[in-house]
Image (cartoon, rainbow, N blue to C red; front, side, top):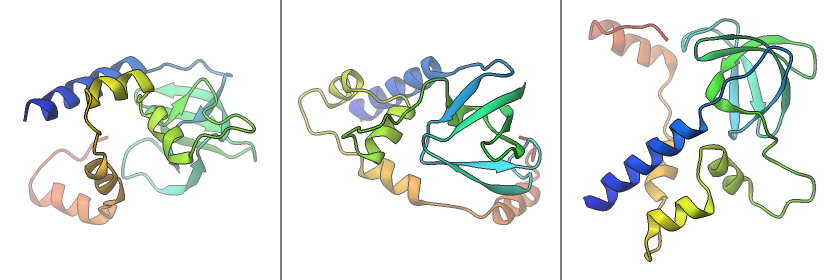
Length: 153
């Protein structure tokens, strides 16, 4: 239990340190396996497509937790700010696996991994299992409505 608590604290600290702000006109890069692009801000906004790890886009506007971006094809869409980094995550000729690069985009690095594992082999099977789970937006919206919970972003 103590290791789980330590892992959670370290993970949240890494995420807080990884938080970024982006200026209009700057180029940013997708730092996760895939990022949904939407017609408007908000979790339930219509999804128009996805961007992939390493894709470069131009920031047009920042609004809270959302970026209005222009893709390489010229499409202007919204995406969650935490899916982006101001540094490219993939370099030409890298030997890193895509999964390792995606973990780096989430704030994991070699020193954090050493600290978490503390001599034991870290088991990321639970994280992998959570990433594979998906709840369709209509099911989530129904759950929130029936439970009289907030449905904002």
